[in-house]
Amino acid sequence: MKIASSSSVLLDRIELFVNVAKHHNLAKTARGMHVSPSSVSQRLKSLERDFGAKLYRKNKDGIELTAAGQALLSTASQVLNQLDTLRRRLNPGLETIQTLAVGGSYNPSAKRLPAAIAAFKKSHPEITVTFLTSYRPTVEKWVRDGEVEIAIVQNPSPSCMKELYTEHFAVDRLVFFTHTAHPLSKKQSIGFDDLANIPLIVRENWEPMEKVLALAKSRGLTLNVALQCASPDAVKAAVRRKMGIGILFHDLIADDIRRKEFKMLRVCGLPRMSGTSYIVFNETRPLRPTATEFLALLRDMKSPQKKPLSSQIRTGTKEF
Picture 1 (cartoon, rainbow, N blue to C red):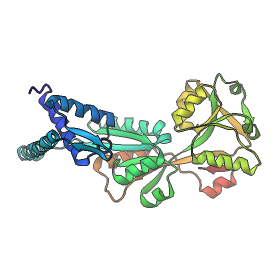
Picture 2 (tube, rainbow, N blue to C red; picture 1 turned 90 degrees about the vertical axis):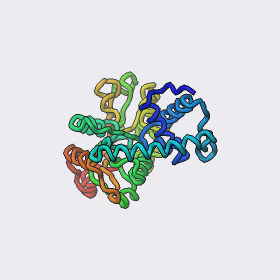
Picture 3 (tube, rainbow, N blue to C red; picture 1 turned 120 degrees about the vertical axis):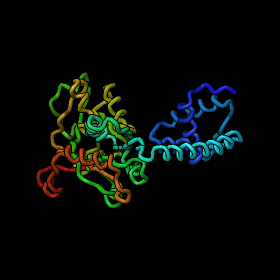
């Protein structure tokens, strides 16, 4: 048998294989390592080519090792343990690679978190940062499970506010927008009543839109929701095709507006609506030094906290 890979690459693949064998699941291993499942799968296929043997097979629960995989796992575990023991004996002061896993729901991940990570990497180039983005419930679960150490979540759920540490970070406003080639882009504003006749492109099962619909219903209006999309990017794609007016938070379309691809529309008769994002982490797991330093940077970047909700209501502002 000829093993073509270099020793360091082969060792990396073997460590990955041991990790997968521990979880019996490619996706769970990928989340724990903050890489994509396809990356894990490709590296395992390379390992199988290295050894010329099938090491695992998929089943309904995840994966199971073949006889060859079991043999490799037994030997590999011993070798890795011996290498770790030797490394610590030869250099007990050797530091491990410093890492930081950061998460964010879609809105803060569009602009604010990338800016924070860029600033952090500039002052801490030696730290490997993993940045994960998903829906709010998924990000909150990542924080609970320790898959990310710190996150920014817009409009956290009540359970998140109760179970996790939350700290005000920034406020963003809800905006209506259209493509600059759409006929409506020539208008400076439209009336709230007009939304009953204009196709709206929104995110599906989205709390801010549910509140807009409830407000319309209270005024005897039925809005024309033409398309519900799974993500903000899908909303923007539909607006680019001039299918109607999109509704998102401003940070998500700020760069598109700057490039003059989208134009915001003022909706007369609709109160200013906003959403608040929060820094979130799990207090039951003390933050490591890298996360503590990132938290300090986020606090330096925070926007001023808004007035209490009662004051917002009096001034005609609603917060989502």
